[in-house]
Image 1 (cartoon, rainbow, N blue to C red):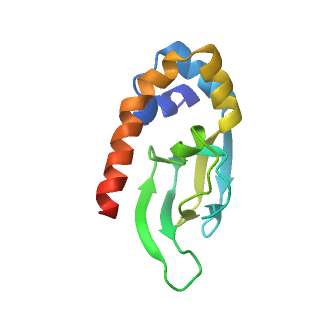
Image 2 (cartoon, rainbow, N blue to C red):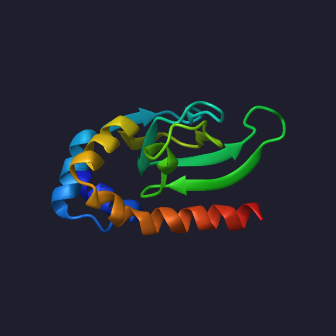
Length: 141
């Protein structure tokens, strides 16, 4: 599967044109992680978005504290770190691999550069971001 096809499989990018997907794809890198690896750590500054190509991860609050709270288990086609595309605030949770995992990674800097030249990309992504924020708010309540 091409990087563009992988991106379009994610709801966040599903409304983008093929041309926009190609532009974003050129800004992504592929990274592999081993079972047990932490991809992001709660509290660190968020600098990238991740789309899972293969494998499975757990999103966990309080990783390694003895008071871990499992928030979600994600697999191929799922994504995390979307807020990092908009800000560089500290991560609200850690993500660890429960099996070998491969992700497409898009840095905030590359994404913002694309938005500056193609602001319509943001407009097409806002409904999905809004739904994810709403869902997160409901889970907290």
